[in-house]
Amino acid sequence: MKIIMLGAPGAGKGTQAKKIAAKYNIPHISTGDIFRANIKNGTELGKKAKTYMDQGLLVPDELVVDLVVDRVNQEDCKDGYVLDGFPRTIPQAEALDKALGDMGQKMDYAIDVNVPDENIVRRMSGRRACVGCGATYHLVYAPTKEEGICDVCGKELILRDDDKPETVQKRLNVYHEQTQPLIDYYAKAGILREVDGTIDIEDVFKAVTDILGA
Ligand code: ADP
Ligand code: AMP
Image 1 (cartoon, helix red, strand yellow):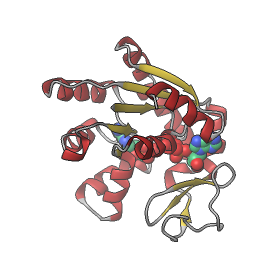
Image 2 (cartoon, rainbow, N blue to C red):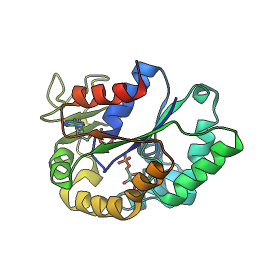
Image 3 (tube, rainbow, N blue to C red):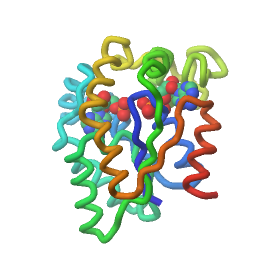
Image 4 (cartoon, rainbow, N blue to C red):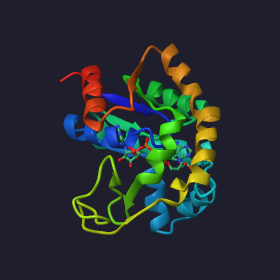
């Protein structure tokens, strides 16, 4: 099963993608996580990506597409995967379709997690990410057992630089201009499914599993 998660930054794509990956036993591929790991490890890719990410801008398509195409060609992706944060532009979606087409494959679902802009700013200011393993929490909606400490690895939690309110507004603008057109793109391809992302995390997941099947 090959799945794309669509939605504004902070809509809950990562939260749902992790749950999908666990339930259906497929890899969760987050381009944001890949870039953050590269930044942490000081790679050339990380250095390049950081300049865009810190400004709330998209990393150029040419730095993202090959990376994802290589990843989905790996052995662990043969039974499917869930893409989170990719594609984010029409050229990325076209490049993905082309790469899959060349392998005689196609995407099965594009699930749009729908959350209005008003909710997003509140979501992002409460999001906390683990500096160690990258697990994501929310101060109110998905709190850790011990405040400020990751449930998974025990490391410290931080507010991502790009989750500060001034950058969030910019990221939302970028989303509307460059990423939202993908909703139409996948509707035309006949694989778009919409879920309401404003309800509880478990209720969103119920809607997702209703789409994907047991
Ligand atoms: P995205 O991957 O789309 O950027 P995340 O999955 O990281 O978004 O979610 C953004 C923030 O909102 C996180 O702090 C997460 O814990 C929280 N969150 C996710 N889904 C919900 C929901 N349905 N209700 C409330 N908060 C949520
Ligand atoms: P995310 O963790 O998905 O919110 O991504 C964080 C940041 O990484 C984004 O704001 C972009 O700067 C960059 N990024 C992640 N995925 C992509 C992508 N597919 N195309 C361009 N930039 C991306």
